[in-house]
Image (tube, rainbow, N blue to C red):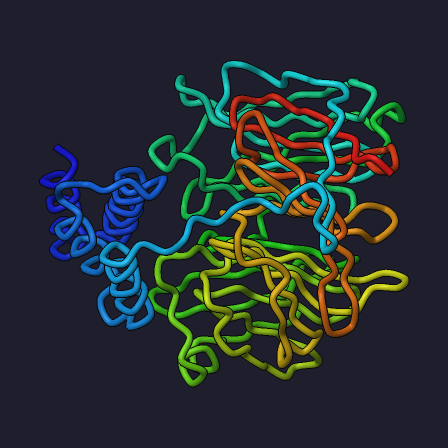
Length: 405
């Protein structure tokens, strides 16, 4: 039933005037097509599936090119990629050591998580229309809050970001989650006073990030993309970046907006296969990165080149601080998650493998490759121990992995 179902969903996308329904239908088409074609296996309705994929992104020439390229590979199969050998002179194979394992809550489907050396926080939604928020340190001391879900039909669409002494938690285009206080418990490592949706956050906000005292907000206003900055709960700037993206040839192509901020007034927004950088009021849009941007990470710290890491549908790329210069970090990992260890090494993890990388001014040096087993990660983060990162699974399992020195 996959082929007729995707056709019906594509028709719903084309005919519906409800933006939310169109968004849900398009997401369902992408999911069904990806599932049917996963692992390189052929599907008897492949042509129809690919046609449905292009119907939900009319005018996206890059998608048409990608579909044509996919079909040409079907006709002439490419050599199967192999993992780097253990004795390779370019990259060594390592084995991770699994450390502690924690279960957050079996009742929830965990969708977003953020962590640092003091601990982590994560959000989930449940089958009985609840939202769960958990804050924990790495010693296992946890604090949990819950809300009634104002948009239970929207699965994993959440805003989650630490900002000063609060955590912004929201459902885009839905009722606000009432602010709830959290006791300032020293055992949790951080200082968090409240969690929820602040009154000043626009209802059309789809993603946020923070840099010291500034909360950056990406908004979807009809067919426009607007970037706002808030300080002390007040709007200090609002910039419509749609024309800059259009002039650069950027198209969304169904990918959600992503944000990352540097210390100061510099912020990057991922849109389709491009990254827009706003710095001191100036907008610059990168050239295409060759894949849709699923996540952005700010690169800053001693010995690291200032800029951004863009996590792509396949692989990752580094962009200079102004977004004008970029180079490939990896082109093989599928939907990688990333984090920086305390010593500046970059960890990238895909569903079945990962890389340890050192970023230099004009290149990425691969230090090690490792196989990765277990559930795919919705996020990874550093922990309170050196050479260790944590992986967060949708089921609520948090596993810590140590990298050999």
